[in-house]
Length: 293
Image (tube, rainbow, N blue to C red; front, top):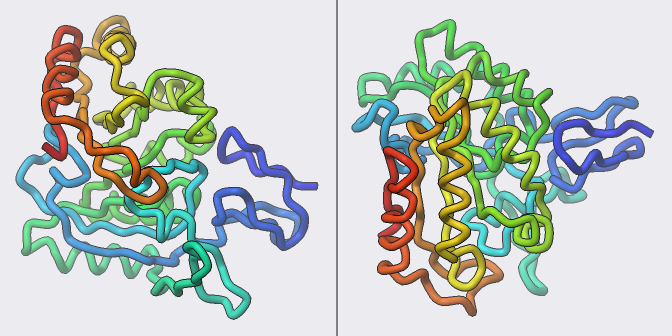
């Protein structure tokens, strides 16, 4: 039975079966991206929205998203597409409570995406951002599109949770100019217990990616979950210690949480808490920013 080697889950899939991420499928005995070229979201965003503060500030970027994700964050801001599944009629749908909703989609090839991005250059667009859902569950599309972007002088941005193997990273890294990687906390209990993720893999991914391209890191702070001052000290200290201390130059975005998805019962993070954690992180890192405040 083929095993998917994209992330820590190593899903073993029978013919026609889809992995936990909802986007990788076994076809003809091989694992491939079922969501290749399927786009659910597109927009021209400011680069700061990704978020980036130290990569072409003030620019715009053509942003694309598909469907699927390999984590199960109960606070997901884009759960409609991250948790969408293929329906029997070939469309995309998501079940919320006892209701089923269809998710609009379109097919955009790498070539078509690059043409669109180039047509937007006059509006200040610098390239393509792969974002909204988890792009690397369909890393083949990211790789192929980013490779074409390079040939046409466009920049490429990847917004990812980083819970993927170095093999996947090596597939896309030569063609990516900047990454914003989520570091959703710094305890194994939070990652494996709540997010159903893998903290060591994310740390390994960040370490490797930040050696070869521009990386900024985002941590969403949730009251009572990952908001302790001690945890922020350990997280910021770890980043600073990367690459023999040069990690202090990696920008960190500390973002305020708002109730969403399955965490509607937890109130928004107090702004004062964000400011306090930012002040702690700045003792270790040179570039620390507040988000959603």
